[in-house]
Length: 229
Image 1 (tube, rainbow, N blue to C red):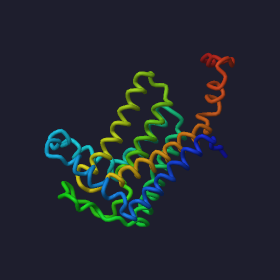
Image 2 (image 1 turned 90 degrees about the vertical axis):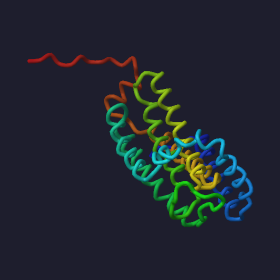
Image 3 (image 1 turned 180 degrees about the vertical axis):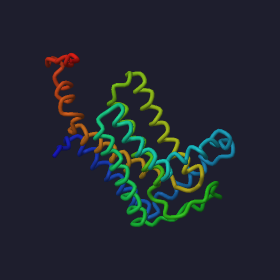
Image 4 (image 1 turned 60 degrees about the vertical axis):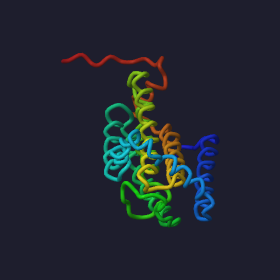
């Protein structure tokens, strides 16, 4: 069974502690003042035109989009990286969805009523499912891309692009009026912890027995394919 490095464990526990702290601040309503200030800033009339594209972007963190990303993750694992990493990634996305739902029920925070929402959502508010699952789904995909054999510049560009997408999905939830900023922040942190653990644990899963051995030892002799006939 793969071991988690001390640094990874510390970061993961630190992230979970932050989520717990945010939960306490939310339940005690201590965070409400900061939430209100940020919501009014994001919903400032002069930003309406600039942030209007967030309306379609928010759908990239929806349940349907996340399911699609899970399928794509498996396909990417097969096409450009270890297939098992893609399969594990899809399972991690599914588990994160279930965990987020349980935490929503446990905290039972109502949706914001500070401003008229642009989009109407049902269910509880904390943490933001779009922010959390967007972070997990697109983050796992970013890990696979970063480990692939695509050109370095392309890998870097794709990972940065996915990071920007995760940020915009979270921002969209506040702008649409369906989440408090603390909901989004908790979702990002919880999702980042899951991606961090996925990245660490999958490092110990070999690609293929032969391929892994060759990659581990670049100086190992390589046999040519047998001649036909």
